[in-house]
Amino acid sequence: MLAFIARISVVLTSNGLRGNFGYDASVYYSAADALTFGRLPYRNFVLLHPPGLMLALTPFAVLGRMSTDLTGFVAGNLAFTALGAANAVLVMRVARAMNLDRRAAIVGGVFYAVWLGSVHSEYLSRLEPLGNFALLCGLLTYFGGRRSTSRYLPLVCGLAFGAAASVKIWWAIPLLIVLAWHVPADRRRDLPKVAAGAAVALIAIDGPFFMAAPSQMWHMVVTEQLGRNRSSVTPGARLSQLTGVQGVVSHLSHPAAVAISVLLIVVVLCIMALAWRMRAARVVVVLGAMMGTLLMTAPSWFFFYSDYLAPTAALVTATAVSRTAVPTTARPGPILRTRVISWVSVLAAAATTYTYLTGPHQPVSTFPSTRLASAVRHTRCVMSDSPMGLILLDTLSKDLGDGCPNWIDVTGRTYGVDAATYPGGKPRPRVANPTWQRDLLNYLRSGDAVMLIRTSGTGVSRQTLTALRRGGILATAGGHTIYRTPH
Image 1 (tube, rainbow, N blue to C red):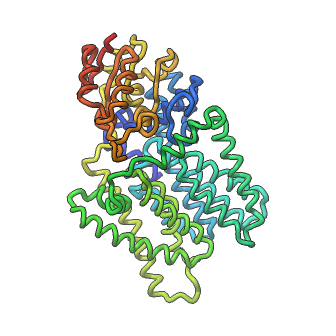
Image 2: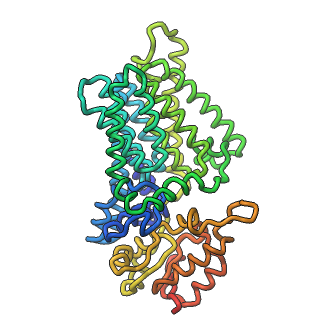
Image 3: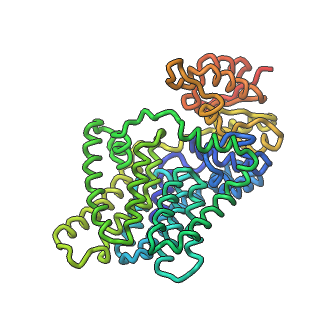
């Protein structure tokens, strides 16, 4: 309940369930909706991730077709909010399966429930909460299998980790680590079952789409992801955002935020060192270290990526406060200090999230859906630079049913077919990319009306915007304008 309240509070303290939730979540929902109309990702539209999240959202897309696009989208977001809360419960279940005491399991669950890194990601349908759910299910069956004679738990473990890798390729790292963890002699007998389970999950989830468009899927999911432009966010800034410092204490200078973040990382390393003393927890410590390294070195970076680390961070913290993790020969002084640090970490996580929720942040923005939707009710093809605009106007399913063009991930094309560089090899920004401007203008003009909802993120140039305005204004409200398309 605590986890659900924390996550839904992000929405309720912003602009509510029916506001503008931004780009990414709308892409995944729209991909699911397009699938219900027979359009396949990779072959018919851009999708820069494996199909796991799209498939999970398909039931909500069906609901949207039966009611309104926004109803299905909101239902999906609420389901993922509940999924985030379920993840906090799963952390406690995994902790108990690791043989941690009840108090330690509660600490881990509370940490996951209130840490800003997970709260900020799990109030809408993103990749992270679904990937974390699969990862935690995999860990639960892994530790359960170590204590059980069941022949099926290792297979289910592989299925779960394979499913996680089918949400985002970053979860291939945990899959490879778990497979490697089964190589030693005392765990080797389960390796074929874990590998078989992972293979079944990967083939079942990804196989049909790969067979339909093997080259396109490989390039979008692997090549274009690994080849993305290097984010301008420095490792120091990533560190301060990862610990929640920069995202909450906005008045801190960058050096101060980094200094505090480094101090917090030292604390984390102390907690990891204590957790390493418990043999059962070592796989979790290794997972956390490798996944954290990936976060710090990945080409792209957004604040909500922090949720990728939430399960392992919570479980390592739980291990640090567990009585069962303390060797009988350990001195009480250092152990007590580390336990205090762990409890302080939980309280700091809660305080950071509370500060964020009561601050000026508005992750959900307002949108005058009622006034603008009525203006395009009888328009055949409405175009937008973001599927969020089509969802808010309730034209997504209608236009897909009418056969209107829909790129789904509009800006995703700039990582592939519309990518461009300067002569020296430096990537061109979208606003200065002539290929992108030409293709974007042609796409937006292919319908009967167009609304821009994220011009800065899309990279619409002044010339493109001028060309779109030539058709005249169909409707305007709340700072948003729908233009007629000149024909």
